[in-house]
Length: 386
Image 1 (cartoon, rainbow, N blue to C red):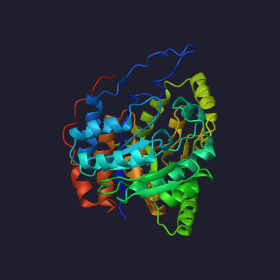
Image 2 (cartoon, one colour; image 1 turned 90 degrees about the vertical axis):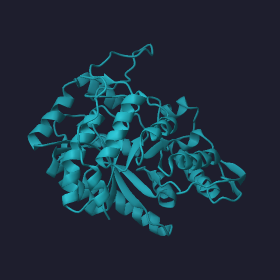
Image 3 (cartoon, rainbow, N blue to C red; image 1 turned 30 degrees about the vertical axis):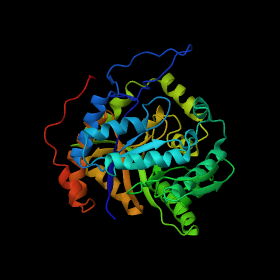
């Protein structure tokens, strides 16, 4: 099993700061502007996508939610700017018909010649879900996701498919031209409601970057559930990265990311994140407890991002060799897919691609094609920012 590397498309904006670029004032008006932010226009996102492809990343994850561009549309556009890069499209299953989603995926595969991967996001924040008209509670959302994915896989068979469940009633559902290849399904969730859904439907179970011992517990949990279903699930981890020529330089960069964060900013972010129903989010918060005091929670694993950011809150920090060491440690547990990001995403893609990828290749953890694609060269032009 080799390491498979993926990058991230910041469709909510990018920059050299962790400060929330979507902070809102009491009257719903946009808050203060933070220096160094970059708008997620198609030209800038295309630079990141081209860099990721050039450096040897297999795919890019595109998020879903209120504060970012629609993942289906933006990646379809970016597919015309790239040749081999795959797109890991995040979407929420409760917000569109499962038969329509299956049809969209099939069309996407034909248009892009097979470059679609699916990231199914059930949703762990009821207030966010209600913005889209979804009023189910946490566990019922996972129940619905279970039905949704059953239907998607059913209609991909290319013959009429019936389904009668609690949330969906489908008669003769059909994708006349099934996707070829069938997109892999990436799925995450740390709650008891999420585990069985992953076991039944996920090709890749994706977890946020907890310390290796905790990640192993999740792997063992999902693997045992999948075995009961007669299935095999592969595993991935979602992390940020700060990799430099020296460890000191990497940690100095991490420290600079904290410079914009005063106590009030952190407290407000922690209060907002603490209201999430997501068990995974709760586990991220427990890694640092809202304090700056002990953010290195495992050698070269830093929880500083999670002080103000929801979702993935940890970063690989260190020299290129140290970052490769930690990737190798996760890989030894059974992690195959590494979905990475950094601030800003264009420059950090080059730091990782030109520094860590050769280290991984030298250790025999990458296939030859990915290693050769990371040849580097002059970086693409950077749009905006300081």
